[in-house]
Image (tube, rainbow, N blue to C red; front, side, top):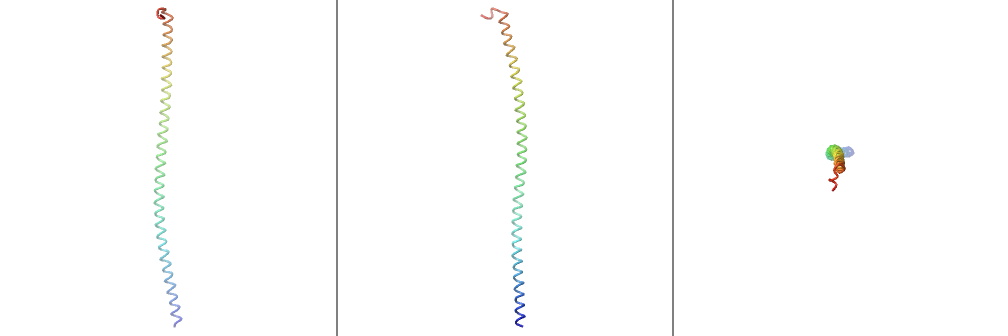
Length: 108
C-alpha cells in the first residue's frame, strides 16, 4: 500500500510539473505574440514612412524636371532676345554709319 501511494504521489507530482511547464510555455507564447505584434506595428509604420518618402522623392523629382525645363525655356528666350538685340544694334550702327557717309555735316 505504501508503494502505491508513492507511485500515485510521483504521478501527481509529474502532472503538476507538466501543468506548470504548460503554464510557463503559455506565458512565453503570449509574450512572444505581444512582441510580434509590436514588431509588426513598427514594421508597418516603417513601411508607411518609406512609401511616404518614396512619394515625396517622386514629387520632388517631377518638380525638379519641371524647373529644369523652365530654365531651359528661359535660356532659349534669353538667346532669342540677345539675337534680336544684336540685330537691332547692328542695324542702328549700320544706319549711323550710312548717315555719316551721306551727310558730311553730321560728322562735325
